[in-house]
Length: 510
Image (cartoon, rainbow, N blue to C red):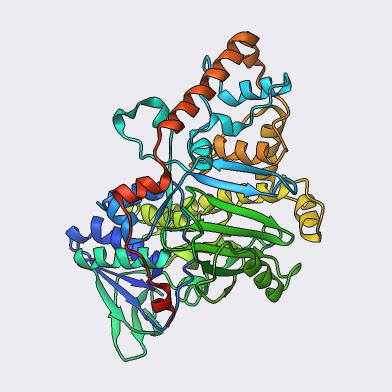
């Protein structure tokens, strides 16, 4: 290790972002002699609504050496196969955005081109009939795919619903075992070197001084260091994603938990429903230009499927991202880096993405202009690509029953999104840009599910005869349905492998 090497990493803030960062850095950097310190205060609450995830979280946990059954049990988790969208394309309509893929390609041509061809010929099978995840989700089934399960069951991709507070506590225990030092305290000041401008220490209100070489800002929306010290700037995306308020409340679980998240469109936003083992998480995300907080709270409480277990928690946010995620010797991870509404469960993924890029670009010394520039480029791409996919949900709608939906349906959209929509709508063509998160399955699910496209298909799909295509698609539906029938119930799988201890909510509320 050189004299100027990074020897001390200081993480400001705990919660999901702070402890995910601490767990990963202590796993991959701890053995190289890097000391990791996390500063947090129990007096500062966390947002804690990031309870639904997407499949990459499994890889993150696996890289940390976490046993999946232990994780599910300790975080009161359930399994997630996708998201059901209700009333998004039009009132009374619903569709499933599955993880995994649709069908099987034929003769090197993507499956959806044949599905579109048959749909135009009068066949009325939805995309759900060709998705193992959608069929299992609606059937209340789950089974963890293993290497010897064959190509059909191995199409099943999954993520989790979990209690974000319990996940942070789980990772804290892991991090401290791996040598992370936790300091309780409120940050009073951030000390900079007068010549270089680099951060040298955090001064706590109780007089402690925490020195470091590299600082991770996990202080939430305020961005104490990335914005408070370095004035990184913020791109406001409200013109495309206008929802800016949320109210969240937990309720008693009613029946066995479904293995999917539900997103129900409302007149000025949408509502989430996330089933955990010990409760159901609910929230109403809305735009305050079209609905007040009292009305949003009342609508949420009236729609609960069980007794409310917590008081409503109101949140304010502005959708967007920092202009710079890494400035000086400070890197923003989590809400301090930006916020994209939780419509597609990307909040925790963006934390994970920031951490993985930091590990790949971990600097050799405090001033690292080459690594900093690449990190900022990659994180900007991540946010921008996800932004476009979220906008698609609002733009590709036929709803005209409220001012909110009239606004988003007719709004101007980024050129990058316009190009992708034109290609997909005309003949079902799709290309991923760079390391774009959401693939063809995701874009097709929203487009077809909201009645927006595709309108045509690749003419190369006409090379197969009508009989061959019809027979192949029928065989796919049969094989997938047979596989789902043989799977255990979601609750039965949890009971067998990772059932959590029951929670006494009466005791917790007192």
